[in-house]
Image (cartoon, rainbow, N blue to C red; front, side, top):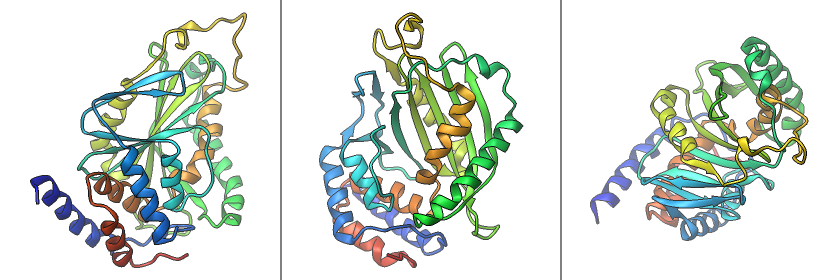
Length: 302
């Protein structure tokens, strides 16, 4: 067994122990056969950095060394297998850190049109938070109908900050399942955006709240590694011909982004199994690790 494989299995054993302490549940879990198939397909198409990843005919992601990209449609199948049903035409792929635990990232492109950023200089973070909470409460009824847990927005982990020079936005929201105990581990989605002429990319890093300071630089490094193609940049906007989005940056934070919270904030067990198990599989663990985790995890309702 190689040194890399030894480290992977050592990490696996430690992770199995931590999963025994997890109290959150995964909604609509897939069968073991579906999980095996999804992970095997993802491993076969995985793209390891460094290499250029074209995205939506809009931009190129210079995938750095030490990370792996899972493209479509395997990315959606992987999400489905891990308890998140449905299709997302915006999803471009998933990013995992190679041989390390702690985070994963979704990459999406929204064909929204040109988003005016003039409201960024006037927005109030407290007002945005209030609107976000109200929107989440309204959406909880639908989440419960779909079998997903209701969510509680606890506050900002990082208030929205927009760079008018690079046209990039970042913010982070703390959330947990509404009925979870106060001591339950809290999740955080670190949301980064790159605005372009015809829409925007969202690169959303999912991790634990306590680990956000450690992994936030990786989110910014990946955001900086995404570059729009010639003619697709924000500065290339033509007011005479181009479509302008019906919403601005504030709505992007409290409205559009809130729709994605149901996918990303589904609990500790989902994150642990998906992010950490996924990177081990890509490192060569294979279907045996899936079976191992299904035996190790305490509560996995159908």
